[in-house]
Image 1 (tube, helix red, strand yellow):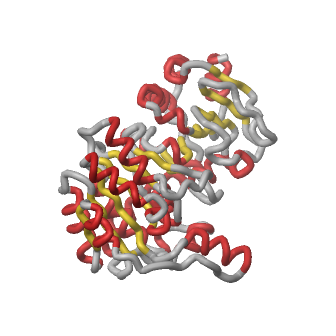
Image 2: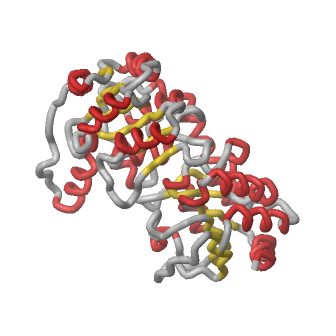
Length: 364
């Protein structure tokens, strides 16, 4: 069966690898890097596979896909004549969103495919993922030459990354643009930091535009809408590895659903920084209400003094009060050896762009 997949790769004009959660396990990620080195196949991933692709292969990485079918990775999947799913489960990104049925589908995982109408693989390699990928890599004889269209998609994606890197810090409005906050977070979430991500509008901006190069560096929910999970996750991640700083991020609506866990963080002296994107609303709910009912109901609240709230628990509270204060405040909060909270006002005016064919040149 491995030889059959190798032959499919050899014949394919536009193969694409779709990574799921299990691909982000360190051993599987290391084996994936060998396969990418031998094959040079373009790759995309669900949100849960964040960090599975390292910097060496970043130019062939089309970014993450999920929620809305409008990303560079989606365009590669629509173009594909062969899709190789590695460690993927349909719950991560609904197959009807990305599988047109025109491509040959290969499933590589520890479990057989959970088949549904839009996910019926033509071939399955079931077993240890790392061992399977290592064997498959040894069967690859030629590196892929990208088609013109695939090359254009990847080059444009890299152009947008460069735009964010060079110009993200120049978005000086206050409250802050989401991309300005993502750009600032990129500087503090290095390979030694673990990141846990809650559910909300901010989640989409982070999932699309914040990069990770370490397997299992990022814990992120997706379709389960698990608001309030980031801070408890962060405490758990710190308990597993107390020597590593953990950054968690939520909206203000998500934070208040589990903010009592600050007491746990303070009692344990957990080295956790929690970042709150503050807009005094359940913004993602508001977007859906507006789309479905053309009106809003029950989505606004606050304001809440999150700095005072954190201080009351015995954590160290910070509040960003101007655009220029963003980066210095984040650095000061990162320097705290113990639980800290940073509140950052955010302007979500550009959120509707997330549902269309957003190109960062529209903003930057």
